Image (cartoon, rainbow, N blue to C red; front, side, top):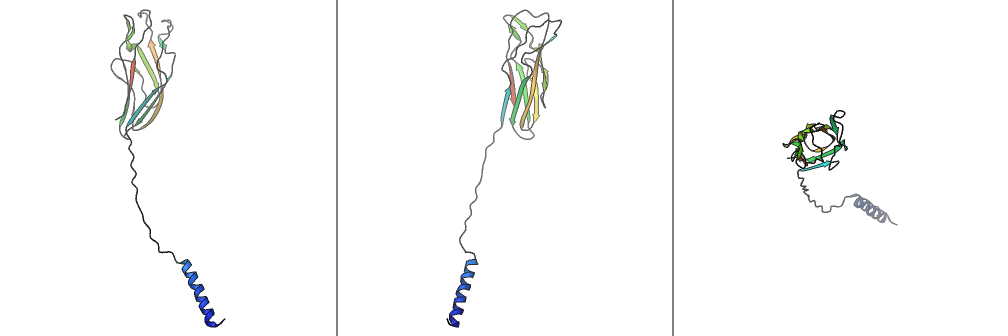
Length: 168
């Protein structure tokens, strides 16, 4: 092999090495994607039971009758603005009724545990049962009591109350 051939061969090898290390000048393209999500305000209330019962008790021994179901679990979930107020109210549809006899609904009261939940007395006007600021989930319990009184006529009394959770 002559000198010229060796030089040519070295030159070809050098070009091959250089060609392999040079980045390819290809074409690139980019696209953007916009992501949209719709999040609506929501409110969900869960009571641990659908009914409570007060047993008959000796008036002198038990001036305040606890409901058999005490305590009742309560869960409030709200999706709302960070500074919005979420409220829970309760309103009775009337007094406790047994035929023509009645016990004033204001004789039913409740205690509350859990952040934001409040104790109160039933009424035919909406009463506050809780209040929170912003979105999230709150859990607590209500325990219900009936004031026991000698003036109640015997009977099986009933009434419906409505809990309303409001989140703007």
